[in-house]
Every structure is written in structure tokens, then in C-alpha cells.
Image (cartoon, rainbow, N blue to C red; front, side):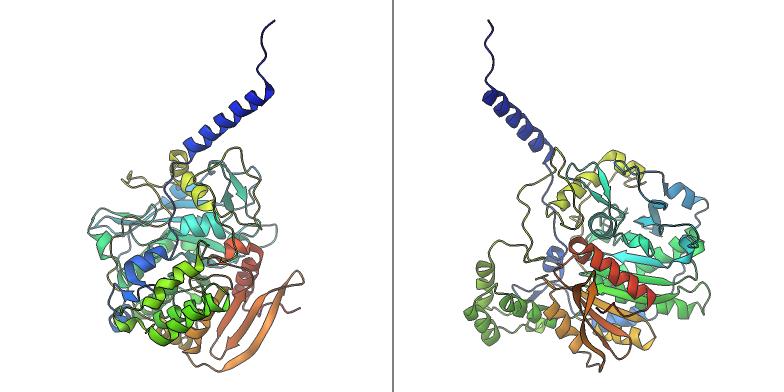
Length: 507
């Protein structure tokens, strides 16, 4: 009679094989977060050091006299960019078209930006995609991907499962209410590239705004059906710089071209946005204390001994050394969210949930967007870049200029009739709601609509107030830095009411 292998040994062997399989799938670099680059390239609130000069006046002047002359020929390119189906896409994916490809922003230097575009979902009798506005989404950093974060982890039509290969539907995708354009910008971010290596060390606020405008003008040549239609922009983190500056550039472009092929900009949305260096910094430390992350003695020492103005030139403040030890190991981008406890993808699949954001999603997206089949389907990485696709760029080595505050630009946009909503996930610790409130208070605008709660499904979704001049502040309850990741239904409600020009629903 042959000896049988004991059941417990079989189970142990299967467990070992599974662990080996998981380990082989997990060799993915640790993804960066959106403000890691902010600390490295521009200013670090822990040391109060600014790595870039505060060039507000130079940037304001250069963007207010901008017009686009670089319009490139692109016959038939739209149909070439159409994505038939993404690898791992679910069979029932909704009724919408999607596109992906490159738009040249500087032919001489070989600079091209990658975009991913999802048209609005259509139903019988709703007029089709052209009846809905066009919305450009930008992520921050600087140097982080709107494809990886925005499209794949936040507000796009699909999310990536834990195997890094399979997609599932996002029922709260923003393309329910708009045609959504995701742009990887500047050169060096994601699949976007330049054939001139020096460009990666010369990026900055001004160059990014100029290139983004050139991209937009040329993209509209490729998709002329959206010319003249209502146009909006939204984004988060360092997009608090990108979007107001691009809005300023668009208004300049419209003025310089005397209305010909004008971009019909109606409004902008800024989420947990970098707005004003000094108040961003002071608001962060005050948030830490009010949320019981740092001790009384630490906040007292910061208030008494630290000059939190970035004008201080990086003055030494030993009290800041205690902040990290006080806070410990938690996710500063959502102070109540669990940490990712493994690296890489996982097999078998973890059952996905849109409502409960998986903190390891960065790894799944990184694996998916580095798959050759995915890149081929999305018409991406056509030049076979040396670097892997990453959520935040490793090739952008420095940042040429960064204004210390966008508040004057917001004032200018409001005076030109541009509607602005600033929204804030209330458990983000990096650009927290305290920072946003401190920053907007600097504008000294009278209150038009008092502070009140707004509702979704009979629950408080957050709070809002509106200032004179068409500026609205919205908070999102229990949302972190990437609001649509943590509160997808509430984020969809916000953009829906913003686009409709209506106040958020009251109970």
C-alpha cells in the first residue's frame, strides 16, 4: 500500500507555492505619492526650505501675454487613437468611446504629451456626448500622472483589480456627467516624453502652462466637435497651480486670437490644492494638532519658535523634528485609512469594492500600465521609453519656477467671470481643510451663502459656503487627499452640481 501524503503537508505545500507566485508578481517599485515631489522639487514643510525661487510676478506676466501659434497637422489621427478595448476590460462596460494617444507640443524638441479620453456615457434621447461638457482633469506632484491617479484610481470608468491585469467598473465615473480628458503633463510624467533630455530639468510652472495650452489647442483640432462647447477643468494637489495658470493662459489665448477658435472656459475645480505656501504650511501643522496627531508641547514649540513663512529661507526649527516621531507610521494623505501591508499585486483576486478604497491600489495600477498589451491597446509608450511607467516621475530632476501663491490668479479669474469651486477632503493631512480655509480667508471676500451641510442619500456629505464673486468652498466628509478615491459617490455629486451651476443638495 502506497503512503499517502498527509493533508496538512499538502496544504503547507500549496501555501508555499502561492507565496512564491505572489512574490514573483510583487517586484514593483514602491509608488510615490503626489506631494512627495512637492517636498523634493519645490518646498519641504518639514525643513521650511524652498528649492525654487518665488517667481510670482514673472509667471503672471508671461502667462497673461500668451497665445498659441503651434498648431500641428493631424489628419485621421482621432480614429487612429480610438481604443477598441482595454485588456481586462469587463464585458459590460457602458456605452461610451475611449481614446488614447500623443499630441505634439514642441516638434523641434520632440516633446509630446499622452492623453486618455473617455466620452460621456450615452442613453437614448440624451443627445450623445456632444450634449455634455468637456472636462480636463490634471493631477499634481509636480510630476504625477493623471492617468494613473485620476483615471485608474479616482474618477475614470475603470479600476484595476489586485492581480494588476483585470479591470472592473466604477459606477461613479465622472463620464456620467462629462466628457473627461486625462492629461499626463509635463514631459517626463507617465508616458509623456521629450526627445530633448534637458527638458526634464527645465520643467516649471510657466513651461507646463504653456505646453498644456498648446496641447489643448491641438487636441481640439483632433476633436473639433468639442470646439466652442462648455469647457471645465478640475484637479487636485499641485494642480492647484496647474489649473489656475492654464486658465489664465486660456484667457490670454482667447484675447490674443480675438475670439477666433476661443476655448469656452466656464469654471475650474481645485481639490486639496496647493494654493498658498505659507498658509498651506501653517494649516498642516494646526490640522495635525486638532486631529490629535501631535502633542501640545510640539504645537506650542512650533508656534513659539518656528517661522512658518517660506520667506524665512529655510531657517532651522528644531520643533519640527518632533512631528514625525509624534505622528508615527500612518497615511498622511488619509489619516484614518489603513496602510498597504504588502507590495505588488495579489493572486487570487481580492474582491473589489469601489466604496472601500484599497490602499494598495498604486501597486495594481503600476503593474497594469507597465504591461505591454495594455500599452499597445492604449497607443502608449510608442517610443519605448527607457524608464518604467510610474505614478510619479523619476526623470523630472528639477523644477524651474513655482509661484508661492495662486491667490492673485484666482482673484483675476473670478473678475473674468470664471466660476471656482475649491473642495477639500476633510481627513487629508498633507493639504488639509485648515490650509484651504486659511488660504481662501486671505482673499477677504464677503460671504454670500453661509456655512451649511450638504447631503447625499440622507447623510451629510460635507459642508459648503459661497463667497461673493462666484467662489465656493466645499468639504467632503471622510475623504482624503484623492477625494474621488475615498468618496466616489460624493465626488460625483460635487462635479454634477458644479457643472450644472447649482448649489449642493440640502437635506
